[in-house]
Each structure stands twice: as structure tokens, then as C-alpha cells.
Amino acid sequence: MSKKATAELFRPKAIVKADQTTEIAQAIMAEETAARVAKTARLKAARLAQEAAAPPPVKKPRRAAAKAKPAAAR
Image 1: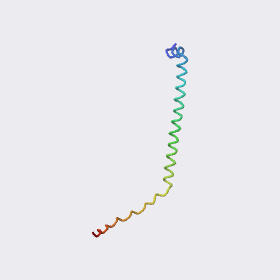
Image 2: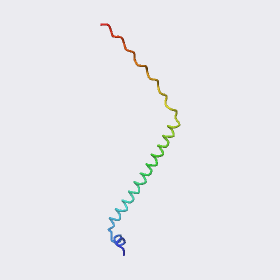
Image 3: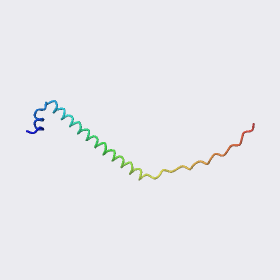
Image 4: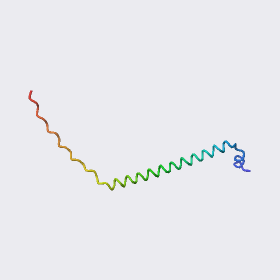
């Protein structure tokens, strides 16, 4: 028997169960991460498309510089 087969054969059930739990948890986290990345990419594409379709913002004209007020009489 190979070392790996021997190690698998004589592993306590608690360790095997813990390994299974870890693998399942990591698989769930990987799925959630992939879903989050896909959602972010989809929302970014939608935002960029919306910005491209929107008319450019209208800039308000700047106010003319305030004229100097005459000095008040003392």
C-alpha cells in the first residue's frame, strides 16, 4: 500500500469530517466570491453604459468677479 492510502485508511473520523467541512466551506466561499465579482462587473458595465448614454452635464456660467466697493465715508 502507498503511504497516502495507508494514511487515509488510518485517519480518525473526526479529522476526515473536519477536512470535509473545510472543503465544503471553502467551496461555498469560492462560489460567493465568484458571484460577487460577476455582480460587480455587471454593475460596472451597466453604470458605464448609462454614463455613455446620458447627455453631458451642463456647466453653469461663472459669475463675473465682484466689483470693488467704494470705500465708505468716515
